Length: 74
Image 1 (tube, rainbow, N blue to C red):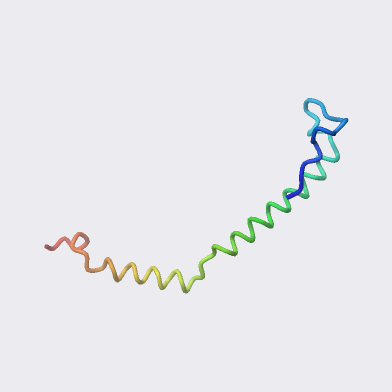
Image 2: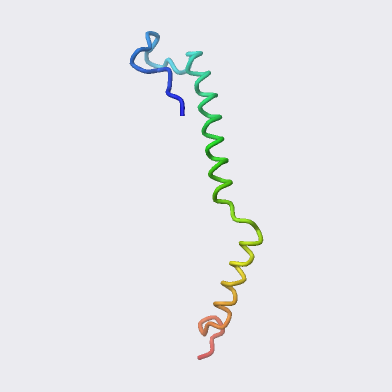
């Protein structure tokens, strides 16, 4: 991630400067793109394929299909 240009060395720093600073606006666009890329990488990493999901769901259905609390019998 890139660092904000609004560090202690910024001479144009004042209250509310983010609303008018062109350096901050440029950094904000780049930073948001980096965040979006990181989210996409995380989404790809944790995405479960449909076939895997269906296999897991089928396993859960088989496991609980004969449970007594679902059928009401003892």
